Amino acid sequence: MTENEVPESGTRTQVVDRAAKILAALAAYGLSGGRLVDIARDSGIARPTVHRLLQELVAVDYVRQLSDKRYGLGAGLFALSLSVPSPVRDMNAIKVAAQDLSDQCGDTVYVAIRQFNSVHYLVRTSGSFPIRTHSVAVGDTMPLTSSYSGLVLLSGMDRLAQEEFLDRLPEGPTSHYWPRSAEEHEAEIRRALTQNAREGYISGKDVVIPGVAGLALAVPSRTQHPYMTVSISAVESRLATERIKDLLPLLQNTAKRISAAID
Image (tube, rainbow, N blue to C red):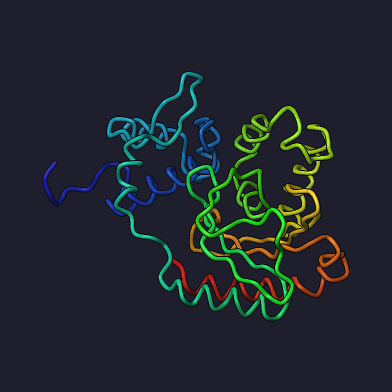
């Protein structure tokens, strides 16, 4: 094929666009991978074209074929990701937005970002009623099932990927003070995931830490799946149902401000 020839399946731009859609669809399935038919459905690309592009992506290690005929992202992408710049363009603007929210509501505000299969905390600001028990610090990285922010990110993933995370929940109490059984803990997490899918945010108390209530939602981005969250954390008495209704618009406005500072 000469330099000016066009691939049979369409222009070079179309090929790149289709490959990008396939990789984005695969990312939603996490470590479990996705079936050919599901990838075609999610990407909106015909199955024969998806199959051909998958084989080409497997050849360059950007995709791997799993033993159960599923496809997942390949290790070659990990090496590329090491050189990818941070999606945060203006960290100071994010800190200012978070602090403004803390000043308005009086509570602790967190901004967190997905880091592989965990959630990493970038910003923490405090108001006049900062939470002090079992608090999370800037720089902490936690499993997606261990915080309100993590559950928001988990909710944006494929159902099969969610089930894999839920299967890895501790079979016994997560700590000596956790008052619920493993079944009750899982049920509460499932409720939170359902709430986020239905209402666009997660709220509640004792979902991940006894005595701590939270209100969290995803920060809008240009990507198909959210990768950043903003949340309010407080003692139970400060996040009653009536107050959550008042705080939600403030949190949504803060998410929009943070969105303007990321890619």
